Image 1 (cartoon, one colour):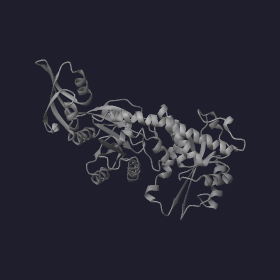
Image 2 (cartoon, helix red, strand yellow):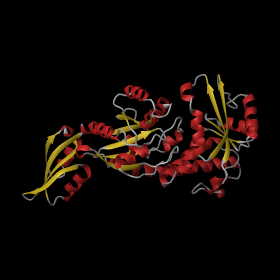
Image 3 (cartoon, helix red, strand yellow):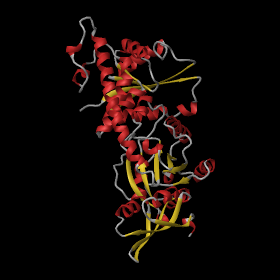
Image 4 (cartoon, helix red, strand yellow):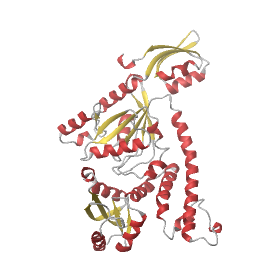
Length: 427
């Protein structure tokens, strides 16, 4: 199957941060490639302000039309977000399908969605994005499950009104389904409240999945593509001193991530919201580290994680030719750790840093319980790290390490718990 030929367009206004724009066309190229398009030409323009009707100026629209014709392009992709009117006006002149950055990202998410949850999330985001952009026909809506029927159309209703009504009905249906998913997901996450949890967050393709594999010994899918995976994966991470944490990989972020996607993926991002610690994974080999980090921090703020404890992990350190540059970035982020998930460089230091962060919340205790108290013993296995266990005088005596906040819950299960120390890592 031949790939769709695409022309990329970038507009930089005087209000834009030039450093942030420096590699945006390169990133747009990667997004287009991930979506399956073949980039045949690019165009960039600097303007004092955007043109309200066509985003670029009249002369550039004609130039863009000629460029698309010369390369046989089937689609024009703007790095900027366009209004519905701007898209219509551009397509009238260029006579080629025109989309913006948000629509491109939504398309990628649609092709990457594998689970039912991800598919519902992406479909909702696409419909909410597309609703104000509906034209005279939306033929695929009639094939959607639960999207209304032709028989419900009023005698004076236009086709466009009918399409919009069907879209709104489907949006409502998807929101109802996702509310159920959200509630179930939140229950799952809150059920782990007694366990230490660490969330991996970061710019797309920063190497979060590779780091998950390296730290936990798992073999999750990894691909050198933007948004290679959309679903959260959680694995047990065994730390020094008998500690263990649940390490969760989340969907990657990107600059100007469509708001509809952030809202739709609320359940997926619950892992980050409720984590004890976030590992902000950064691809330190790129030239736009600062912009990537700011994009991630912006999304974290949007989902309520702005003040969540974080540890910055500079990944792909083996690809940095200049060690002085890496040292400068590390000094700018005190407490950060430079690693390479691929070579294993720095993973021991990262593990130690995380252990020190989490150990402050831990406590050791000796628990005595009747052998028949299976509920307590099962709770210990699920919420604590068992250091020693033996039978004494008809009782099970277990020395455990667990979060200090769970001591009261432990005592309430019918066992006698005597605290030993609150500094297990110093032993």
